[in-house]
Length: 129
Image (tube, rainbow, N blue to C red; front, side, top):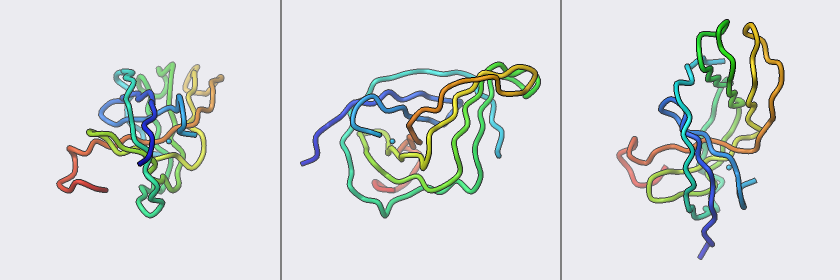
């Protein structure tokens, strides 16, 4: 049986991004209204056949582009299912997530962070992705 790990999930305007804290090493424009953090216990899944594909990057900003001071960019590519808990499936991004500070609509700095997507199981009518 796979061992449980913990992750920190950051909820972003109705979607979720996850940042690894142990063991998960898991352009459209959407406004970033709020950020919440929550530590969750997850169970790793070894099923590389279950994936989500972003055909272009997804960007969240905390305000309209010229007034935004923070942004998050999920890279395009194949996100593989890596873990789950009772409420979410966790998919690892193909490359680091870009967290940026902005000035006059342009990035001025910020880290690249390992992570991915957390999709709520309640949004689907089936019990597996």
